[in-house]
Image (tube, rainbow, N blue to C red):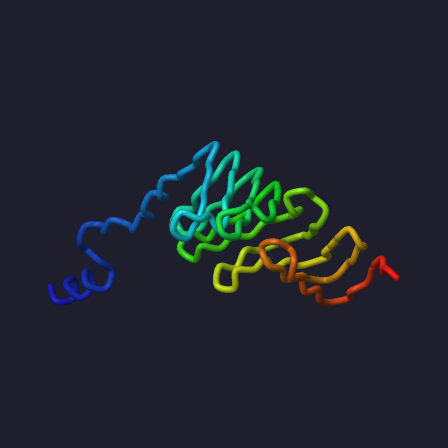
Length: 168
């Protein structure tokens, strides 16, 4: 009897325990024809329009498709961007744009880059290269860029080269 009890304890004579089953995946949330914006008071800081937005299961990150971005100063549009894809970090209020083109409203100043991000802590756009930046006075290529929303104050870094027209 004692041997049988020890064997039952070692091997497990009780009923088979249920196996842990992974919980079902969180529902997938997708929206089409979406407009998002952040502002201070009644003045916009940025806006995003996307054909589609897919929220990841944790709800902290969303992927956007066919994106149009707007950047504002005192509620006035100072630059705009387009990108086939973007990623929004919801709680952090920042987003990244891939294969992006950002221009002033009239298009005379702007840049193109592989990736660019809106940084709410600095109020700047940061792009990683290669970056192509242009103004009416010339074109410059670089490895990266930091710019204010209106593309008026721009810092180019990493392998900077290009041509500028200098008036005499």
